[in-house]
Length: 554
Image 1: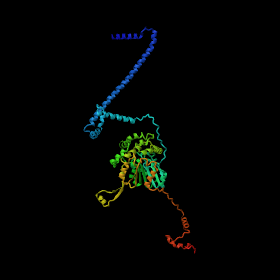
Image 2: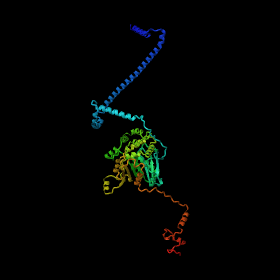
Image 3: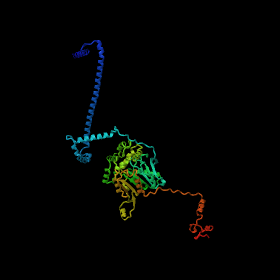
């Protein structure tokens, strides 16, 4: 019966579609009107099917997101339970070590809970705040697509090679340049290691060749490994840096002792030369000398004064170089290795005084700085810069205090101690014996004054020249009077270059020597007794005319 009723209802519906309000239709009109109706029905069915498909996808996506969220929530709860059961127990080593500092920190920060809503658990609220802050920080760092209307920056240009290179014993090539007088006229020889983010082109910025000639100075600058045109040295340390300086001195024919000059971070390699090759170094000139900020010999007050002068970013760079050097390439590739020129303060992460800011805005300084930067990063490798940053803050293998001149007993023991009381013990001199001159600007924010105070305390023989109102760059860059003062202090009154003594030509024939002697002695009265080794018997044939005092001739 149900099937009969369904067939009847179906027949009734079909009849209703065939009959409109005006009555039954004819055969021809029905045939012509069914075509658009069928098309409309098909379109409607397709639309319904498409909508169902879209709704089905939406439904599946929503259900998948809900399931993923529930699984993540359960996973987080499981991790929390595991952490509570294994790490956050009362007898856990981590809890025992961190409980005290965490309680102190929470006690100091407890006042921040007053800014939270009253119905919120502080632990839950601060955990959410810290998580959101961390995610926001990550997004700000990762997001490098900035559609800002900033002016075009100047691109870093790689110049053609121009340095002279030498082959070192380990097969590396070292690039260098010479300035001043030639080797055979040099009264003083000076080797200059450059600072961080610099090259051999720096030397003494803006020094005049005439001033070097006036003092008879031969100035040799070179690129550190991986900088400029020098080959990298992945396993380098300060001892290898000093040996590079030693090989360079022999290769360029510096036969006598040479002076070493360091500026800022370049002083790290100058200290190494004083420590590892003291027999080849005549003296040292340090301008704004950099020392290891983690040197154990520094007092708490000196360390506090040093770190307080640096910017937050500078402190972060030093701490990363000390603890996590693998993170430094991330910052370097977004600054001076990005292929664009930028501000010096940003690239070096430093804060400058008023005089330094006025100097770096000068077109001459800007042109010099950009050219030096381009030469420094010409290889485009980040490893040499990371190695240089790590060298500054890692264990040097020595302390600056080791350079202090002191008497050292060759042996130890009670008998030696008793002999030393009566002055009978054998003693030797330890440390660097040459002069060390230090120039420090009082307004220097890059290498604070506390570092030179530290040097003066541990090296009492060093001559520290404190410069009032001078910054980090103002006394060393493009200052003719300053350059003259530095050289006059180190070398005294200028005496000019050495004059090469030409070798006298020696005649090959001995007879020519006798003839020249006869020509020279002809007409000159000679006292026979005053000539040593002269045979008087040979003088009988010689007659000398004598002129009396009255002017008459006999």
